[in-house]
Structure formats: structure tokens, C-alpha cells
Image 1 (cartoon, rainbow, N blue to C red):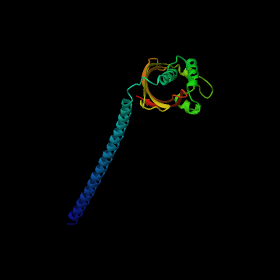
Image 2 (image 1 turned 45 degrees about the vertical axis):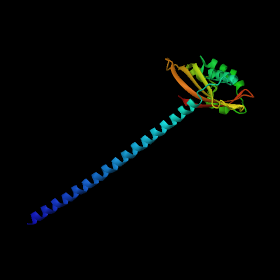
Image 3 (image 1 turned 90 degrees about the vertical axis):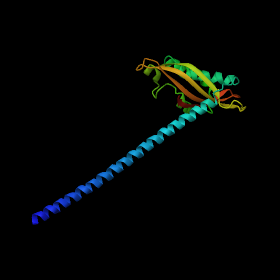
Image 4 (image 1 turned 135 degrees about the horizontal axis):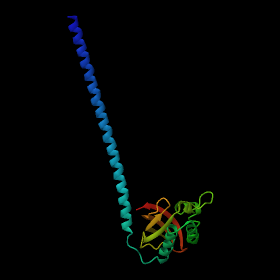
Length: 202
């Protein structure tokens, strides 16, 4: 009789333990499923935000896609700057190009420290030419310039610049092509570039 009672108690205890383990497992699985759902929702939200930003950029470009025949000096200055920045065959030509277009820049509006963020000197802290060190050469193949507000008669105009270029380096001898989007401010009274920002790759 005692053996049966003891066996019954052991069986009951084992059943309770297994039942408790099942509840814990279900709860843990439910928690994991909730975590996975949250991660998926967060990933989808990030992707949605990225798509929204890209669409905004596309709308902005389409809004200024009509090129104005006015602003001839703006077009000339901006084209010269872009060609100087991204067309060079070695470090010497890069430095020479940069020096040649510096008179186009309003140094009061666009001081060296700010200019260097977008249009670097090409030299490292020791004065060594980084272009030669990397054996870089580049060429601009196409430039498209549009004015943000074609009806504006303000002295400072905002130009959106899209240009294609190819780049070669020692580690990548095969030319790599890319399209860059710049925003450049140009003062049509002083005939100087007063702002230069790189929006990014398109």
C-alpha cells in the first residue's frame, strides 16, 4: 500500500513538473515570437523610411529637371569646378586643377576648412600627395546642371548638379563609374561660388 502511495506521489510530481516545463516552454516560445515580430516591424520601418528619403530626392530632382538657358556664367563656373574636382590623371594635375579654380570660390562664404570637406587639397598631414599614393585617376563624362528656382531674380542661385565620372586606382585598375549629386550656390553679382555640398551618390 505504501509503495502504491509513493508511486502515485512520484507520478503526480512528475506530471506537475512536466506540465510546468510545458507552460514555461510555451511562454518562452511566445516571447521569442514577439521579439521576432518586433524586429521584423523595425526592419520594415527602416526600409520604409529609406524608400521615403529616396523618393523625396527623386521628386526634388524632377522638380528642377528643366534646364534654364539663362545663368550662362553659373553654368560655366559650376562646370569648371566639377571638371577640376573629378578630372585628373595624377596628383600633380589634381593639385593644379584645384589651384586653377580657387578664384571661382568666395573664400569669405566658403572658407578653406569648409571647402576641404567636399573638395580636399589632395595632400595628407605630412604634405604627401594622396592621389599619387593611391595611383588614382578620374574623368568626368557628363554634367547636368539645373537651377532650383528658374523664376527667381535673386543674386544667389542654387544649382543642382548631377555628373557621371569614372575612377581608377592601383587596387582597381578597371574604371568604376558613378553618378554624384552636388548642390552649389552661385552669386551672379560677384560671379563667385558661395556654397558647395555633396548630397551623395545617385
